[in-house]
Length: 503
Image (cartoon, rainbow, N blue to C red; front, side, top):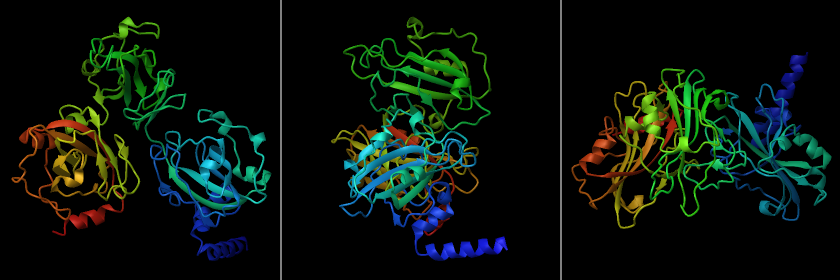
């Protein structure tokens, strides 16, 4: 009898929400009843979020632009919660408040009152996907006094736990109006207790980085790693007499559990001398291919000892212990690493961020690419896959995805296309591939590329067994900048492969 009742209930729910995609998605993802008792009926619009699509913590780290259809005379409350802390199966701390803005007039979010400052997705490692749920409530009685709630800053973690948006809505008689959600799992980035985040060359103050940061990366739990943090510009970038000054070293790290590693050199934050301008502070993670190592020959250095930190060499240390730099674009693709970044943004909304994982669907269209360029100089842009058909057996290394030469400044659309753009298309079962963007400066100015065969985006011809470094040598080009992402098979790949077989 009970099974019949459940079936009737399920059919009724399907009928009610067949034409209401918002409601159906909230039910099928179990946000109803895990988070709220009934689903919203209106879509909360954020271009990157689409009913449970997967986004990375890196992609959602910044405060988003959120909009909805609103009565300009009404007031609203917007919340973002993670109901899956620490995991969806065991949500002991659910919910976490990621964001809470109240008394929003109409859809003017910036004019609302922020009770809980925004933080992006931060699921712990190995906790699988978390749901991150945006909910918009209408305040039926207008503006409300929320002063008893207190304020939660970006760096306050304790004030976010054990929240219930359901109870909050009941307390203030809020009416569910709109919603949306995405899913995310762990990815790598470095954050400090101050809330500051390391983001490939961004400027941070010594005050922001004075405490030991939380450092994460994608790691095999059975591997051991070495973490090194150095100042490349001591005492100054123009006169780096003491290059490098080592600020932190932890070895024999199991997986990415830095706290369980062996500290050789205690952490100190940045401390550039007055008048020496900006210094570059670099984090490196190396894999220890032979497993756990004996580092007893290395002197331990506490945070008060400066003399033993000077004139360190990351490269020599890595060579001494046969360490492998994660990513391995050097030496698989390049003999040395580029000094400058390339900014790569796709129409899908995702960005390339030094090895972050993107999907073939994310990167199927031509991206916007820019770099620091001299307007009168010419450059060559290359996108290459060194892992064809797989990273373990790269028989076709490299596979050419895009080549544009004679680019004036950084105006890619005005360059000469040698190989038309194709996105990532790793075959099924070949794991993650690296996709490497490279910018070369053409020191002699415009180059004659007429000897190069042109390749359309419908052809595989001339793409396998390409070598970016040899191409650069052939035309005497100088490596300037780089970036990379990783991707593995998704449902778009067969479409791309069919496209490449059409000519």
